Image (cartoon, rainbow, N blue to C red; front, side, top):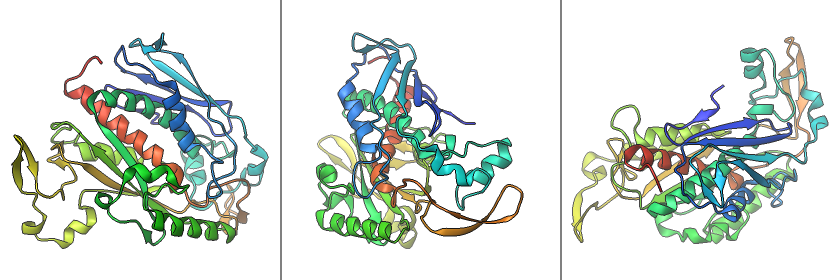
Amino acid sequence: MGNLYGTLFKITTFGESHGLAIGAVIDGCPAGLEIDEPFIQAELNRRKPGQSKITTQRKEYDTFKILSGVFEGKTTGAPIAVVIENQDQRSKDYSHIENTFRPSHADFTYQEKYGIRDHRGGGRSSARETAARVAAGAIAKLLLRKYRVEINAFVSQVGELKAPHYTSLDLTKTEENIVRCPDAVTAEKMIALIDQVRLERDTVGGAVTCVIKNTPVGLGEPVFDKLHAELGKAMLSINAVKGFEYGSGFEGVQLRGSQHNDEFYVDEGRIRTKTNHSGGIQGGISNGEDIYFNVAFKPVATIMQDQHTVDKDGNDAIVSGKGRHDPCVVPRAVPIVEAMAALVLVDFLLRAKVNQV
């Protein structure tokens, strides 16, 4: 089912949306890393449901427990098992789709592939699974602190509303509003749009931009395991993601080579580039400049409106969303994007040269 991610720093996530718990097993974390449990909980709090009027009202505290791999506050090198109990499931909200396929969900494809599916919240296909990724990503972030690598994501677009380019923003202000956009003026408009869409019983998509600073030169492999390819794979594995671009991305096709090339120069003995259309990655390998990329999220598939569909026997049916769902997923997706980026960077750091903290 593809529940394992990573080469040296490996995670396996487990659990379903309406099961007893979800969690992750992390293998390959070096021994001696100090585990900051309040930091891990703070990361989970950024992703958890019910945190504002523009997110789902499901109440999950997402309190985690570490079952193994940590002794006296430090990693031992053994597998780290993290578990998060589910507390606010309402499985009855999904009884109406037990035999019916929701448009743009994984219901039909799961049924066809496995011959069985957990209709309660989507089971394994639910975005609830991403809480386990955030817990694992928080541990990866703790390891990245040793190398001064900083990862900051923010909401850069909701619908047609776009924030300014990250270079003109103060990313320390991202957490100052409920939509997680560091530009206050744009944030107000985004919040108003999401609230309007919620009242219309509909959903809206958006984008998250992620910026990685202080990445060492040389991470990534030149052929199949390119750094940007692994980042793309990691981001596209997140629920509702429809697109990934790094550096100049699709807009770069409008430029000539003479405009797009990042010329080198020496700054205090360090080789740098005058521009950064490459997004901090050249030939699949980090060059030391900021790595930045955009992740596009579709409108949430569950809407509180009637939609035409079919049941598992091929009969025409009508389905309408029930329960508690996000009108826009991007505010809660910010820590998920950061977590997956951290997992990619840590894995490449270990692959490059690191075997202990």
